[in-house]
Length: 155
Image 1: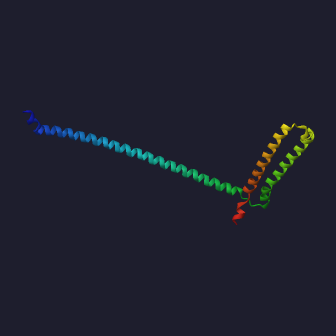
Image 2: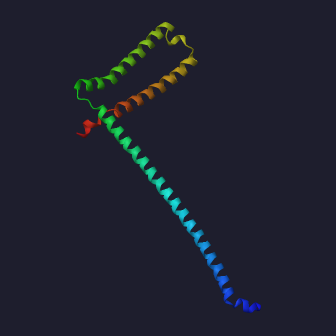
């Protein structure tokens, strides 16, 4: 049997067909492995997304209930409790201003007034007092207007 006859024979066709078939099955297995790996990765990603969504939903729910609980805790059924709560800020503010003024007056008497300080220190003190008064004024105005009862305005 010659070389040409071998290539044209059924034996060569069977060998080539078997090799080709084996090669095709091997490629199909590799392709299926890639598809399965992709499906597995996508399933993992999807489950992680669902887990993250559930965590976010849970956190939002907790925050919602915390906000509702805080809102409910601020409500009182007693007019006396509301009056006391509303009076604490102005009473505390008045008391602290009085203490500060009293201490300043007593210290002024003990050290002999501002005349006992050198001019260089008085200039620094003057600047500090102006900055402090401006800061406290803006803070007080913002605090009082920011803490006003908004529920009364909605009614």
